[in-house]
Length: 124
Length: 161
Image 1 (cartoon, rainbow over the protein chains, first blue to last red):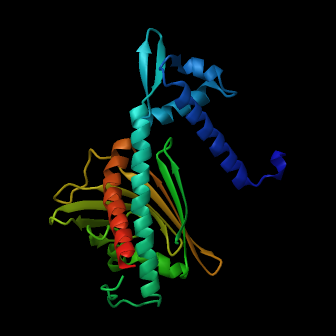
Image 2: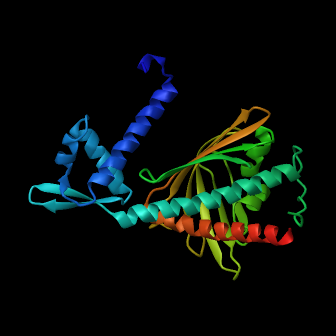
């Protein structure tokens, strides 16, 4: 695929996906906590600064921690945090699915503009 | 089915939801802009929301509380970052303590809503970026209530057959 064929939007999406793949890969490789940021940076075709940024995003999210070993900082994946993040997002999904269902119900019951009187609530 | 897609990006603590409604853009906007409508969908049925202050202009905000089955109150707030009625709204969404004062120790979510014409109806895209795992988990508790109510609803439907 030639980049020239892509719209701005799809280029954005592509870069976004690549970034996500890198982060996912960092999580996978850091499970044992033996790699430093510099070692990780050697594994990807991108600058040290870019890899450092991905690690920082993961660290901010609580998904990895950094541990000082002499002059190096070793990156370690927190499997429990990864699990908790997945579970929390599943529950927030349920929250929003419920909200969207209620929004659709309200729209079906009061479709007219300016209908300010209370809508009847006993039916479901 | 109104929810068209949900993307859960746990590496970035981000949720992106796309929903399609068979209603005009203004109708969907009013669900956010009319406090009486907002309180009918924001909280799960067993935690109905009561909106106190409501001003969707930039710099304005919303304060509300949700009342639980034991009469327990859970306060929350929005601070409006930008608003372009009837098509977009960006706000920071956080919790408050029992007296309704914003909790300083609890980081907040940034939510962006885009409402656009789509076919015969309206598409709503919501992107929520959570500040931390802890904050996501606090919100998730409300999702647990919701999930439970949905499964009870499904059971009711099955029993009615």
